[in-house]
Length: 250
Image 1 (cartoon, helix red, strand yellow):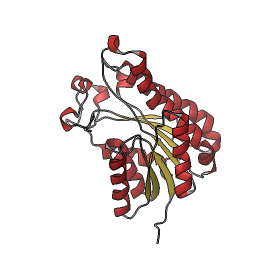
Image 2 (image 1 turned 180 degrees about the vertical axis):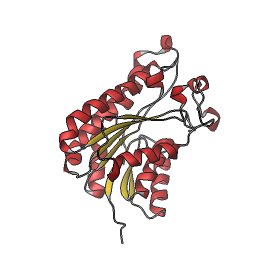
Image 3 (image 1 turned 45 degrees about the horizontal axis):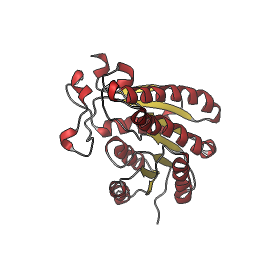
């Protein structure tokens, strides 16, 4: 017998780190989950296995959401597997650091296309189905440096700051449809980057400390995302909510 589901969530960039924990958290809350990655097939499949082992329902779908065809295929995969979309999490990102003088247009567009174009494309493709939901929710995953600034991240900061603007605009546009749109802003989270535990933190993390004296964990971000997608947050929209242990106050 298939597990009952309370909704269907699409999570981009869900093969590892924060995206993985969001997928697991949403599944634990009773949602079927489409686990998206661009190329990390084995890791995406492992997330699906973890969800199914816990009694949930999930499917993996590889797609480059920076392209219209990729975003559309992701939405079609959700409809094919589960017949609806209630939640969209725009988490996919590229975060390479480099001095501005070395930042050519190709690298600028690489980051912008995944973070900002991808969020637009996925939201646009999913909108007809979110409108059919009685509890539609979009959560964009931002970044603290978009609010505090940092060296070597002009492309990432511009894209993540754009997500905040997109969040506020869509909250206006989609509010009449009952769709909430929020942005969760992680900061100083202990994640593995570049596929290496030895390169787990970007350079700009050294500039700040948290009031709590520790780095955050991906599941602490995921729990906030789950709240915003759940039934008790239906009056919260257009917000950028930080999860950084007070680092933004330092």
